[in-house]
Length: 240
Image (cartoon, rainbow, N blue to C red):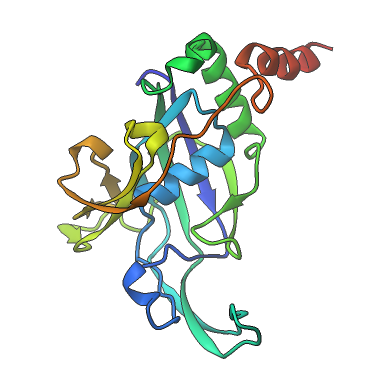
């Protein structure tokens, strides 16, 4: 696919929080990563407001296992209390994604150089990303490596039948990507076949709920580096 990158992301644990478990303070991870969490990981590899990353597929490489840990989170009013978080243990995923240009950012039309963005993104994958990688939550450090999607042995490769995960959060609609002055939460019903989850696009989600008001972020030469400058900075160093 055009403008596509493929990478493997892994860590000791992950917490893709099910929002239903936040009410009591004892967080529990979904069994699989959400579209939004994988999009956040991809944006940590390389992101600019000119682009929108689309997550195509994720391949679950290790068996889905959970572990609970006693945590003492700091409360807003001071002090802390003992609570339990349930994490995914030893997660590893192969991810396939591609980018499109953000049609709602006409102010950044001069930054739409497909070739340069794609080459920077592939370079960023090869060095483990441009920013720190987290698997759902900040305490879950992640690591990124380039891969050929579909290669290697996955735990569910020979599993017969489809696994359904019920209704889950798909992701969040932000004004920068929708043109609306509001934030929306998308829901969907994912299924896994032989370890592979194929995501529907955000605009294909039919279960959408408004969750707040938000304004469009402003970007200009003062707070954003152009793709031309970034490309020259990265690849001129490699030529030396």
